[in-house]
Length: 205
Length: 205
DNA sequence: TTATAAATTGAATGAATGTTCAATTAATTT
DNA sequence: AAATTAATTGAACATTCATTCAATTTATAA
Image (cartoon, rainbow over the protein chains, first blue to last red):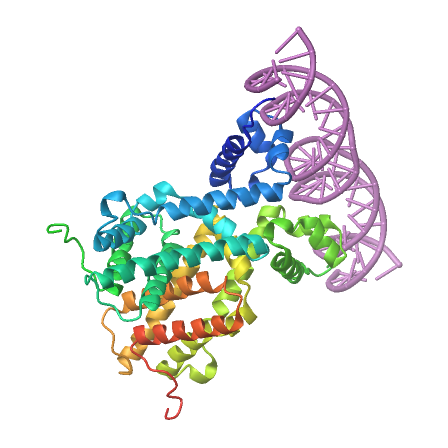
């Protein structure tokens, strides 16, 4: 009896608006009041679902890290071909798809919180480790399938991630479109070279 | 006539306290009032020197980036020996010296501001570019002196920086001391290998 | 000693912050 | 229709915020 709960759906709505406002104006300039104003609801409703601003921010971090994970998702079409799967992942990471899916500014903004908030630090650490584990799995599968020849799988995976994080740290400040693309290309090729993989080769399965 | 100006010294004092508080509690939790309280002065005095909080933050960014540059300084003792100079730089970057000199949390916190503040973005971009130019200069000097054999100097320098930024992005979340040191070592060796340089060799000049 | 200029204080501002609590509205079940 | 439960509002809260302005203190030069 009684009214059915909209809790989870409503929480997600709120976080989405939080995300969009923080993306535009920065995390520190996005208050509960502003989120409520944008949604045309009362600020106290936000507090009703998230008890404190802190909890709301944790919700945002969860949301962001979930989005981040999506970049590493392999499409169903490639799930059986380990080589194609790996190529797809590398392709996604070093492509404009990244920027479409994801806002780097918020990612770094929340990352900075990790230095003063143990919970955020754990969330980020677990994400980075899980992504490393995932890539290790893909590489090992490729090795078993005989399509990849690398020695130390863990090191190779770590090198890829260091390349990714280092690359985007600089790329995020590059405003010139052409330079951005050229660099992105270069970094992607470096990733493939770390894996001893070569470009294209979508000709023969 | 009149009193002599303490402006610059006082501004630096204020920024130093700003830095120390923001390092401890985070940028967003550090207000003008708190800085003033810590210094036992009136908040209006801070506004007197920096007209707005925005300007105060720019001052902090300047301060942080200046500190960051120090890591890349070459000691006088090595200024004539290009190979030693390069080794010293790489040594400093991948050492505990980093953490002693510098707080990564604030560096990332300010970096995140770059996504919404053109001035901060420019400051960061110029810093990263000047450091790249500096490293390129060192590498070229080494090549001229015949102590280094690399092809594309610019790419090599960029690879070093990508390694640095990517390495510390993960390292900053590693709390285990031993793992931290092992990784740091590994990354340093990778940097040397990118440069085709080998470790130690402090035996013969 | 007096004029001067900068350092510093102190009080006050309005706006925005996160959060509270009670009251009301709306949906769902019995 | 009545009971129940959740959604939502609205008003109020104390706090903190950045910033203002006038007044005062302090150091220096004439």
